[in-house]
Image (cartoon, rainbow, N blue to C red; front, top):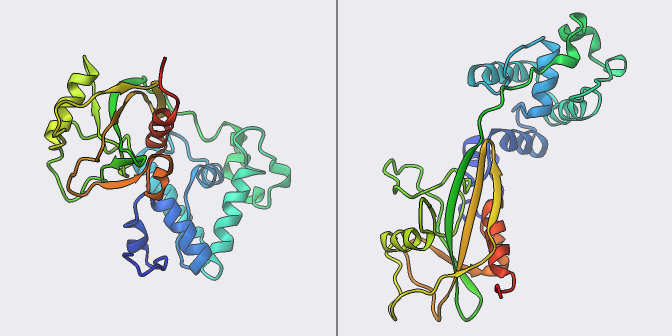
Length: 270
């Protein structure tokens, strides 16, 4: 609706779409519109790191920016889409993480990593961060028609987000009412729903626990306790959307949110 049914061709507009980051924007714009934007993903970063014998953690902010600058400098301005696809393919095949096929590589003569005999050692392994355990509870409303309630992504202009808001874990996309838990999940979830001004006019909600959901986001190990809440009519909340519980992907949602929906759709516990 925002772009009249057409995919935008400007980088700023593409990055404004939910769930689209720098890599996806560059790939689409270069391949579909021949725009001069260089892609940088794990495969391309590995190729560039070996070409330049770049050591250290590639995901470190300044080093990643240096790699992006290299990708921009190497980009074929006449055929950016073909170039990007070639770089991604090179990283996915010949310049693979293990046992790079340097003898077959079309750019081996320019590779500093190969000259120094360290190509297979690059990129250097990142220091493993300690796993952070996160415990959440989610409210999955279900009305008589099988509709559920999803909350909108947080307003990026809003610097004062609620204490219990977890936009990072839901990828800043549409999500079920979800709250961090340290103690009784039902008590915390009830409190969170009150903050959202979600109340049952006929009294208290009945929380039907379903199977827990396990999810991993970078170094976070997430456990979600979903609670199915059956209602005759979905509560009204500003900005929320009503969608079929079995078809929540009509809106942009994260993998975590999809897992919660699948758990809520499973048969009730005995």
